[in-house]
Image 1 (cartoon, rainbow, N blue to C red):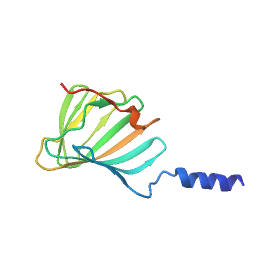
Image 2 (cartoon, helix red, strand yellow; image 1 turned 90 degrees about the vertical axis):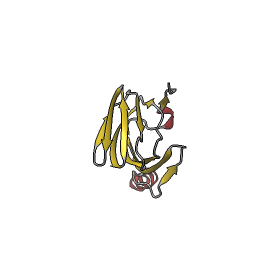
Image 3 (tube, rainbow, N blue to C red; image 1 turned 120 degrees about the vertical axis):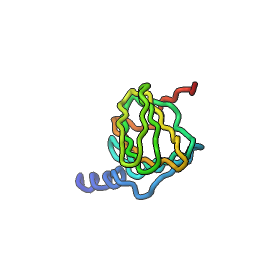
Image 4 (spheres, helix red, strand yellow; image 1 turned 120 degrees about the horizontal axis):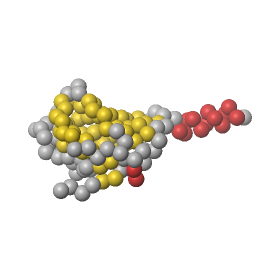
Length: 128
């Protein structure tokens, strides 16, 4: 009986999603491609001239891989431009932001890793 219960539990909490989930904030889209214990993989599209708000997280780090377009990344005051096939790491407790300074959509893959990945671990800062 224990084996059957474990199997049923793993079916419910498995790491693979059957369907993608997409949010559409004003600046673009976020599609959850896969999630599991301690990780989530998102496809993020940022419209030209738009940006994601400056934020930080206490319980997760992020790795961003640029698929297409150009990303202006600001992490703890350090600014860099990334293009296709380039990536960057955003440690926990780091104030960060990504902008699309280009004329085509910025498409990137975000890998979140940490003990807690809830939306209430997004601390947003007001823009100055």
